[in-house]
Image (cartoon, rainbow, N blue to C red):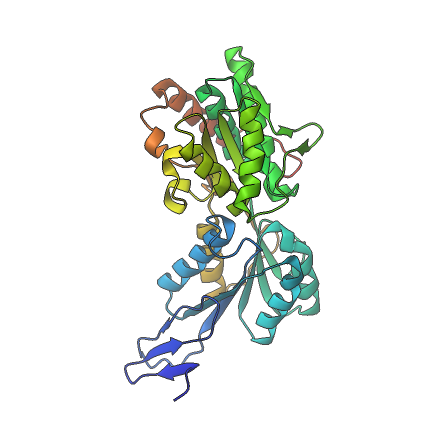
Amino acid sequence: MRIASIVAAGGLVLSAAACGEAPDENNGAGDGGKKFSACMVTDVGGIDDKSFNTSAWKGLQEAKAANDNIDIKYVASKAEADYEPNLTQFVNQKCDFILAVGGLMANATSKIAKANPNQQFGIVDANPGDSNVYPMQFDTAQAAFQAGYLAAGMSKTGKVGTYGGLPIPPVTIFMDGFVDGVAYYNQTKGKNVQALGWNKETQKGSFTNDFAKQDEGKKVSDTLVAQGADIVMPVAGGSGLGTTAAAKASGGKFSTIWVDVDGCESTPDCSAIVTTVVKNIPDAVKEAVLKAAGGEKLQAKPGFVGTLANNGVSIAPYHDFDSKVPAELKAEVDKIKADIAAGTITVTSKAQPTK
């Protein structure tokens, strides 16, 4: 009996191939058709980063749920040196669609894509510019602008903060939007709320230099809180969990804004999260995989850019903070979304994806 693939008479395929490969459901429809394989390489934060890797995997799972002819699996990168071997492994396995997750993977993906021009790749949070790499990018500066305005309106100390994992575009785009939202609040209300941790003009600020170590996230946010920030937005993947846990333990001394995936659905620290700047990776990935599985050629240009107007980015519900956010402030944040979507407010960032 082969462990790797046991096919029962009922058509259930049990797969013991590692790395998150879900059991295949084959309803024995007798189509004899080849399965469409969608294979994902995570960034170093891992599949359970409660952030962009988790989101991308959810997109694959939803694609499989919508089309049971799709097989999905992933391999986790432990270090940047794993990107190329992991991508190459899936090329060798003849995966139909190979998804790279995260801006740090752009160079490795481009290199492997150039070496395998007939292979279809996708990438989240980057656009290497290769014709066989379908880019899925998100103008999170737009939703982060809303979050910055909200944070400024909620702050009791007149100081809010943000920090990143690494100074790369998918991170700094959030920080740019956040500080501009604070500035817009000040301009609109005649206030002087300070945004700590990031200077948009110099593009310098606070970073953990890591997307996994929670103690590094806590260390950076502790510094911001010591400087007076009572709301902190970490843009650092799993490292940010150090901040949300500390906020939860602070007894209300400070609270947080999460990013990527609604923090009340993805972390245990909902009670300390005002809202989340959501990047709708699951829907973008699901749509790309379903199109590719249906035989559609994914066009590298224009690719996909998520905005407030197409619901590719958003801010999550306020959850535990719903009764704490004044109705007037909620209405102003909603109006900002409408104004940005309509082009009345223009949000800019050096890190914005080109449309």
